[in-house]
Image 1 (tube, rainbow, N blue to C red):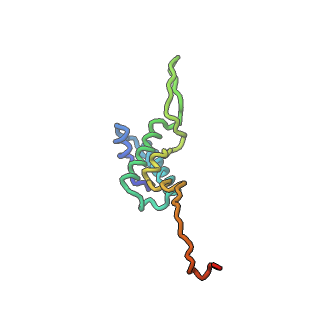
Image 2: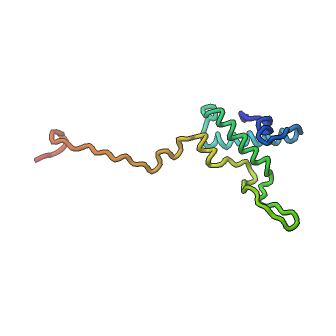
Image 3: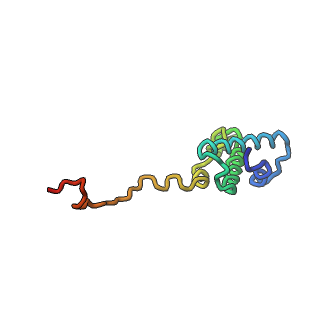
Length: 127
C-alpha cells in the first residue's frame, strides 16, 4: 500500500478528488508507483518516507493530468503539445535520484594506488 493518498494528490492537483471512482483510480496509480519503486530499490520502508511520498504524488499527479498519455491536442486549426509521459505512471530520472542519491555516485571512478614491493618480502626472489 502506498504511503501517499489520493488526498495528497488532490493537494498537488489543486482540486478535490471527491468521486469514489476517481479516488480508487488514483489509489491504484499510487500503489503502482510504489510497486515500481519497490521493484527497483527494494524495501520502501528503508527509504526517506518524505521523499517517497513526494515522488509518488508527483508521478501520479502527472498521470492524472494526462491519463491517456496523449502527446498532442488539437482544437480546430490550433495544436499544442503535452508532456510525453507514457500511458502508465512514470517515475522520472530526477525522482529516482532523489529516492536513491547514491546511484551512479562512483560510476567510472578509479582511485589510483601503488604499493611498492619491498626487498625483504620472502615471496620475491631478489638475487
